[in-house]
Length: 367
Image (tube, rainbow, N blue to C red):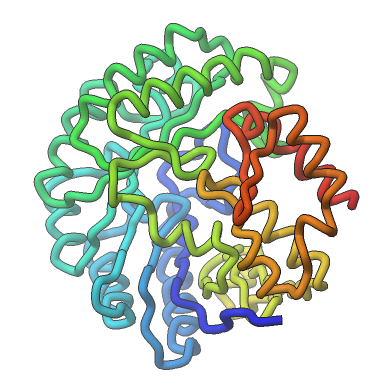
């Protein structure tokens, strides 16, 4: 089996936040200076252990990377900038309230060329429900400010909040498409355990309303020049996220930081989620080796999220397996239901099928 083994992407996790959002289940801790200094000593130690190589893309996520002091952020960006190839994509996540000229000048100085802003919603009631700190006016003004420094801006949005009406999503979209942005990540709310939403609202998920909202989002954004290329991601032409495409193309990548996960030599590894352990350089890697069946399923799972679909010739070359022969009964079933569309070279979900992707993948998993 042929597999590209050299990672061309690096993920860097910054777990610190000024406040904890009510829906978030990521690895995060409230910002405290005594933890931050130890964390970065350990993070920089881990960065040194990476072989002397350069990446096409580096993505700094969290947590909230933008909550860091500017001197520490500058040191981090300076170290990472040295690990980039030419024609790179260098991304960082930010909260709305952290977007000021000092922060934007700093990230611009050290080569950041893609900024992802966590807005989630423009509705004041839902901003408060999420325990976010920004206002509608801040969101609009600060995105416009950021666009003066960084051209390639993504906005993260969520639909399907408890008590959210269809009209609320329409209002969010009306504001969104008039902002100077190139990319939109629009996620359905998943109420995760260990979150405040799970304690209060786990019985309130409405799949039918979420499906209605999603279809409206899809058509509205397409009409306004943001075409879907992955189930939850929409971009103007030429502004797809190169880093995330590494994941969806099932390619290998490196990752450093608390609870960071990477993929190398057909093994997935995950760091400890315990901050004390990490700060003592006890990364405690959990390593999962993927069987051939595991690898094929992940290939299917990831590519069916993409509008481009799965290339049948590429699948056969990579795994020495004829996709249409191995999965003919599943494909036949979902093609008849108009959930899958098949050509001589590709298989992909239809728009209706993308709403039913979990059921499609369950069938492939059982196979």
